[in-house]
Image 1 (cartoon, one colour):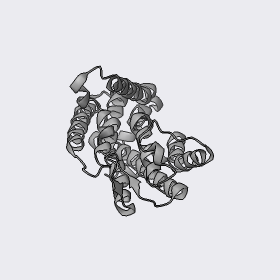
Image 2 (tube, helix red, strand yellow; image 1 turned 60 degrees about the horizontal axis):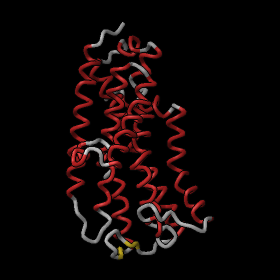
Image 3 (cartoon, one colour; image 1 turned 30 degrees about the horizontal axis):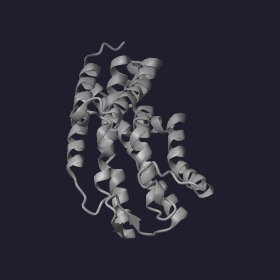
Length: 265
């Protein structure tokens, strides 16, 4: 993994990645400020009616939004350009003449692509929890089953709920890596995964695929809803983890094969 520090520095030097960290850090406090200034509440969202009565509701409202739209965007912004950018700038040859094999380069880039989106998710989780507590304090949270969760338990469940988004986030990253490697286009690597995720979300919301919806890449992002209950159920979490793993393997194996066999001049 000798290439990992270099790949991380390149990613963190990109303007859009820095902007993503800025949004993840300051976005939740801005949402809290807007909600505190409004007379109405986002009652059409899960936990929206409780954002001013418990500080643990806001991070779940933010998580609900991110689960539907933001996480695939974060993964694509980071991973969609990592491989295609080398093609765009014609730097593959110089990169591979530094005593690094294609396998080492692929592994270093892939690990960097996984670490940065995970760090973005963690930043948003901590920021939204801090913003929620600042907005409404550490009052007990009313769960989805109607029971009251103590502050300590609510904190654990909120952080655990955010953690459940990591497997599908990494699967979205793998999809962006595959499209970046195969297309050699930054536009395709960044834009196509977002469009595919949007299509999957629309199919899921419309119920057009029936039970086949469970196999979509975006469905595991919603598995956290089973945690924030008195009688928590974990079936969707295990199923979502397996679906995410299947997508990850299905994307990374061909991506590595294509890169290893590519004619690079």
